[in-house]
Image 1 (cartoon, rainbow, N blue to C red):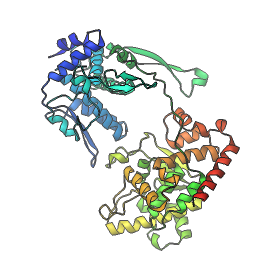
Image 2: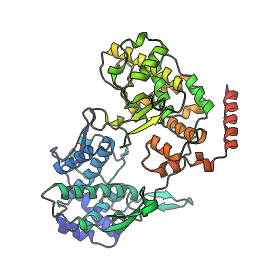
Image 3: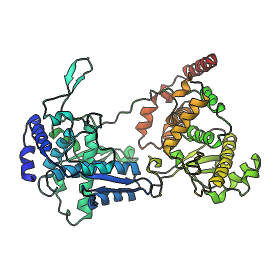
Image 4: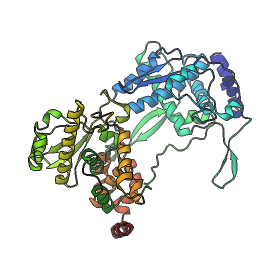
Length: 501
């Protein structure tokens, strides 16, 4: 097989007939493995491998280029899995992107995405480990593709009527993401390799769009050109949804100030690092992975920290402590720095989601924060001495197996859930809390209680777009907030908690 055979099927106009022909071909294949994205969490090494386990140099170089551009490792892993699908598709047809019309190749790639299975089930499991893709002898297709359209999925529409599900399981917006990465990979090949320097990337249609900048108010929006991915998806016969982002207002119930005080007053006094961890989430609105990633310069800690009283320790730390938690003399406040450390040798699930660094001032009690900070540092020093560990991460494990090791974002979630189950009434609404609830609490408190500007809240939360903040917390904005009603709700919630005991 090659591009001529692919071209014959890809040019069938009827999408159902075309998909059936593609499905017959993919069902007939006997494989000797597929590509896989290989990732080592301990060393943060990532690569794309061929079925024979050799490195695919172009794809791996693309991922390394993204890593050098400070993309989070989770994002790069997704890129690797997207590229794996593209490389599988080209391998199955034994063709190169230089062999023919790129628009036709990409349209056929969309058809390929519509036929492959994406979710593992008991009936039809997918490889559990990435390396297992290299041992597959068949192409994992979904049920409709395996039967070439003879067995179709049925679902209920919005009116409760049974309706046949169209070919393909991937939504158009997800296909758009995969196509976007494929095109970025093509651009990388053309710009960084001699083999593809004459690559006709212009075969892909382009559209113009007006982009808003900080100078739009005086110079109007800027016209930019971009590849028309929607055209490719429509050409494959998929009705794509609007690309306009709409953010749904937060539906999760946010704890009241009284409930939050109740939660912190219920925490055990002997778990000082945990208490400070939850305090960090509440005071700065960090994501759990960002909190787990906080570091400090241990050389700036007092040598006799365990023997200092509160006032001595507080004065010393305010003057000398250096790290992601510092006291800024200029504003007389503690601040938290969220720093992107994608170059560091650490676990991928502890990565910051935000690419840009940010600094968040503390708007709550400075003295209370100092007290929790001192307690947490003292406990940290005791655990580090006992485990004989030496690193700069702030939050560490106390468990016998991992004593002294840094915690992960997953550990933050587990710590909170364990605390709720052990120290909070099982009938309490607080049982529904997650670390992200504390982030929502921070945002709502800043908007509703402190009346902060939404642009400041966006910056402190690390949202890439103001519309994310505006859409998520629209109920808490001043224009949509009836203050008396909010006070009544707080009073009502307070009495309800008191009634429950």
